[in-house]
Image 1 (cartoon, rainbow, N blue to C red):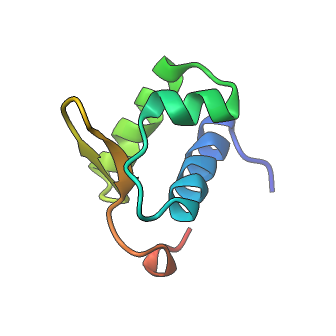
Image 2: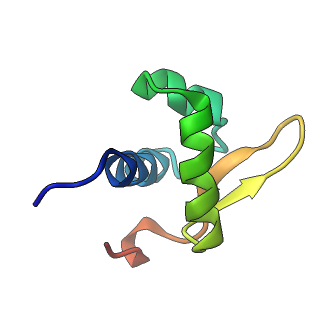
Length: 75
């Protein structure tokens, strides 16, 4: 199976958030980890937020995290 770069990064984001389940991560942290543009990651995280897979917390101490337990998410 061949994935688009958008899908690949979306899956990577979900897996990374699952590894850090008790943390609220900024998109800057994740983009630095993956070596990709923060703006590109913003588009991906927005789509994942709209589908209910991740939740976004706004503000100074904000970030993203999984919206539910990783075990309940299927691809």
